[in-house]
Image (cartoon, rainbow, N blue to C red; front, side):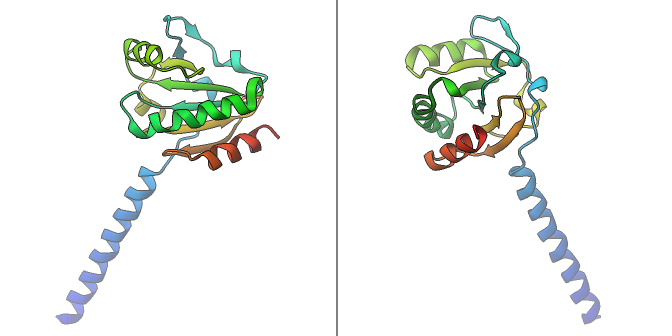
Length: 163
């Protein structure tokens, strides 16, 4: 009887550990988002084609105005956009109502291109923000990062992308 309980307890512990690991992996999963999957509008409501950004590397940050870590990243993106100048495009995409994005932009002086996603982030496989995707000049995803970037990581990703 004790042997049976020991086996049962071992099986339960393994199942619990497996469930925790699966949850952690799912939480940190960043989908492979192809540019053709993203439909956006600019802040004037005009549909934008992401191929308009072709020819230059593109950094897309999926974010929210309400998200503290997202807002914390913005000075880093600002610094990087000044460092890399016109060689790299920086695009911030939110799935919030356009009015919130317009208000945020009017209160902040960041030079980014802001856009509204026409898909809910969840439909793109994004479970939480921030998520940053790096695309080369041909539109190929070269890197992706879930959670906030620090300055060193951002610089490494951009440097790798423009090689």
